[in-house]
Image 1: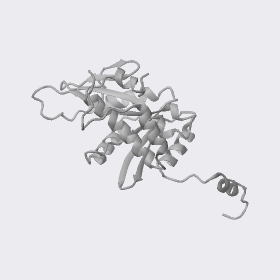
Image 2 (image 1 turned 90 degrees about the vertical axis):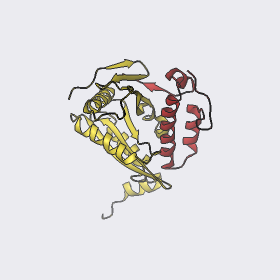
Image 3 (image 1 turned 180 degrees about the horizontal axis):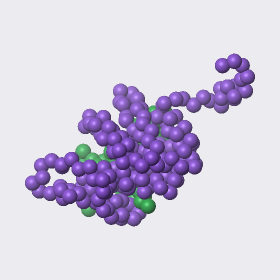
Image 4 (image 1 turned 120 degrees about the vertical axis):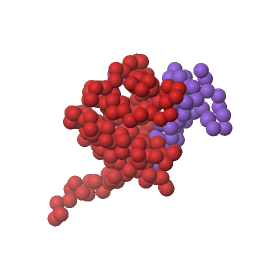
Length: 63
Length: 176
């Protein structure tokens, strides 16, 4: 099920967060990391599957 | 404390159900961007999220369940067992409950740690925001010191001297 962009939820890509991290200075990089973590959680709540998140460039891992 | 049985949906996530009928997904995601200044370390850095994906009808509040902690820490220990990857957790502060979340995770990893995992805590002050976070790494990870140094710099625990300053310090035979 794909999530729709709503005023509350804007779909993002991993590249968006990577670029934002590069632009952030010092410890603000961790703010971007937190934003990305929250984004993935929100995306899942809005119905994005792991496959869809991977298509947007996010990577996951198991052992 | 016996962890719940969990299913691994390779290569994406883990899933388990508790005795109260709640279902959880648990996953590690690429956290390399925050370590991008350390290209040798960055691909091995992961964040994690634990999500409640199903709550039975009629269950108003999820009951306290120590087996969830045992399960989560068991998955993390397994993830770190190869001694390559590290896990960083950054506590969500969007609902002002980050302190409670941070202490919960800290105590989970402390209580169920068999001594194999090193946990470093940090607080990042970015503007008016405090970000509570921690690094989890296997004690025998061959890059343990490199990860700790990078984490301390990224979280602002100390500032790395620039190369000239470092050179001066290392070549200074003067009194301490």
